[in-house]
Amino acid sequence: MKLAIFGGKQVRSTMLTYGRQCIDDEDINRVIEVLKGDYLTTGPYVKEFEDKVAKYVGAKYAVAVCNGTAALHMACFAAGIGKGDEVIVAPITFAASANCVLYCGGTPVFSDIDPKTYNLDPDQIEKHITDKTKAIIPVDFTGQSVDIDAIRKIADKHGLLIIEDGAHSLGSEYKGNKVGTVADMTEFSFHPVKPITTGEGGMVVTDNKELYNKMMLFRTHGITRDESMMEKNDGPWYYEQIDLGYNYRITDMQCALGTSQMDKIDKFLARRREIASMYNDEFKSIEQVVTPYEAEFSNSGHHIYVVRLELDKLTCTRKEIFEALKAENIGVNVHYYPVYLFPYYKRLGYKIGTCPEAEELYNRIITLPLHLGMNDSDINDVIKAVKKVISFYSK
Ligand SMILES: Cc1ncc(COP(=O)(O)O)c(C=O)c1O
Image (cartoon, rainbow, N blue to C red):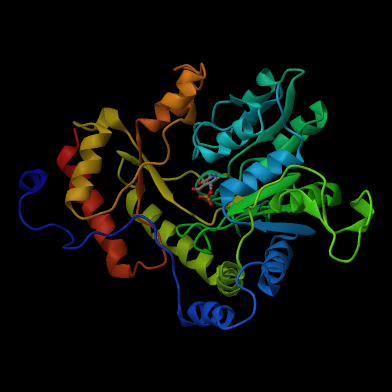
């Protein structure tokens, strides 16, 4: 048993999870109100939630759907990605950021990360651009915005669309503005560990009316009641399917929760930043632990807190540190395995060595708990456990 190695008592007696939703009575009452009302699925809260998020980030339009993956699929559809198209994607991310390209018949092309921010390195992107490239999907990993102006410049030069995967970055800032207006479309996720939650949920924001219209169609089977888009009008009951879409609708219950969560987002982000800064202060003097680097253009919302281990200064592997922290009841995690190394992607022909920086990073990272359910004592437990484990394994 690992615990024996460290002797004495565990830092904690109960497991602290790495991420968790934060739901209060206001949230619960807002959902109950919908349950007692007329609309369970599409109802007034859907538009209210969309408007609230769009206004918050400074975008003109928003389309809410049933999850962030559906939102990415919808954005790829609106971008017109299809068979034969290539899309440049990030390797250190959740699989959905690349799967969405495959859903549309396109080919994800993985470009390496900046070893400091762990986001797509703008300097690596251009060498992957061919006459088949249609779009770039950068990810704001951990909540830190990618250098979106640099990516915008490349996209404009080559006539590409940008679909920003902001699943981690609702409320995060780039050069003082909220993430969500520089890319052609920006996707957010409302999964429970994300900056705000609707249980499951996702959204795409855009300033482009044409893209917005395409997404609205895609969300609901490709069906419209807008006469200006229809071939004919057979009567007041009549609608037309003018494209192939899905049922990616989000419910009014989820959007009611989303509107209530949006009322608290600034408070949520302030606390997340506070926890990250407490960790940074404590870990900056430990040479075996590299705290998250934040670029000068970024004000991250710290969706997750990822440290990089200096393994050459430790007597053990990342796995041993991971297991030792788990034994202390610290619910660590690892984000992420480079997507193209998964068996499915390997079967499609993707190879080890495609993104050396991403592969190197993967072997060294650990995600520490950071969520709004943590009190100062929980934060101190994490700090204490990290110090204990690292000092045990220090060279
Ligand atoms: C970077 C990233 N993109 C996309 C998604 C997909 O979001 P969802 O889980 O809402 O489908 C996630 C979710 O974990 C994510 O982390």
